Image (cartoon, rainbow, N blue to C red; front, side, top):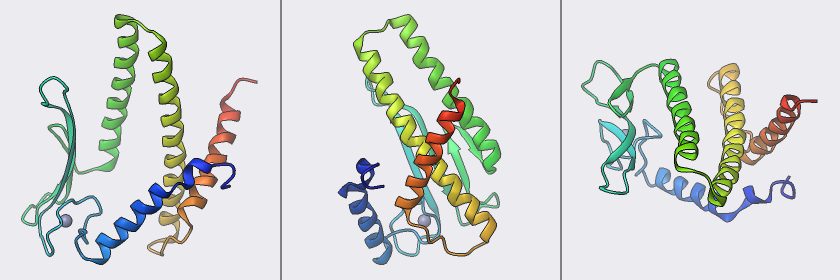
Length: 180
Ligand SMILES: [Zn+2]
């Protein structure tokens, strides 16, 4: 598989994993929520936030994050802009719509603003990114399915093995989806 997927086996992910382990071992990583960005040891309120900003005035175009306050009766929430979610299914229904909206905006941009060679490069880039995203999504589905069937038992399969498996799965699905 290293020959088939050489891009996946670069030093960068390895170094990121090492850094992540160090923060966990030194106790600066939140022990409750993987997504929490508070690094204070023993904190009770958890949060994270990320955003995309407008180039012109650096205002927030869209932001999202999570909050889990110790005193809250709601429990943890995930927010997208001003909407708060406590249910994964409801959240997914909304992120699907936002994803569709972004696709429509891009196509509209091509029609209204016109296309040139840059548009082709951008589409190529998008195909590459979406393929990588699909491989990662298939691997994530596999991990989730194993977690669901084996209860709380430790997930031992190596991440590289999952990604390789997912890439083959995607190739098979692509052949199935293509017209004969
Ligand atoms: Zn935390």
